[in-house]
Length: 93
Image (cartoon, helix red, strand yellow):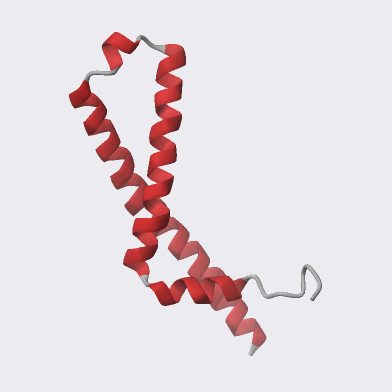
């Protein structure tokens, strides 16, 4: 099988089978964690640890990052992939 012979949307068809909730939890939460770690790195390099790393603020920041990653990233990526999938499906038939 050649490299570009496989249909890229076939992966999305399999992803759709797992459902929106599981997709949101697996992909969105991982994205939210990356955002959290990236922002912590920025704070570390440009701000003081003493003022930014209070445990309550850190937990609130983690919760916001995970929530926004889960619902924001999930919603956007599901919509984009679904549009691409439907367009490809319509063009094939």
